[in-house]
Image (cartoon, rainbow, N blue to C red; front, side):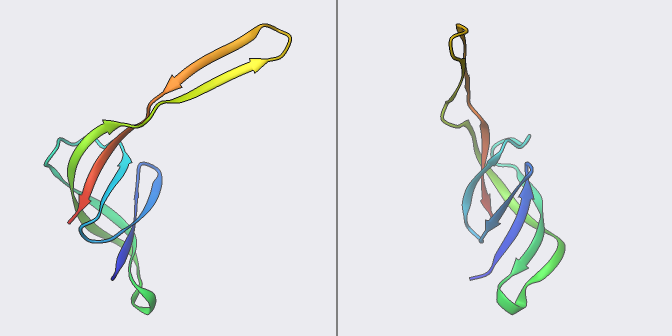
Length: 94
């Protein structure tokens, strides 16, 4: 069971072949393939470091759950409420 470490959207993910995961939004259409750079791949003593490529297919796009940002200063009548939904792309590692 070998895995690879990839970086996309400013985050790092540990992935295996056939795995589906959500990453920050990528500008590709559903069904298109994309190549991701791996930081490392393998397992245990067989670990290789350096930039190799990994293929993935875009499964879908969506938006995550809403989070509420609420700011308040006591005794000053200051209140601000803001919502946010982060976009994501679901990809499948080939």
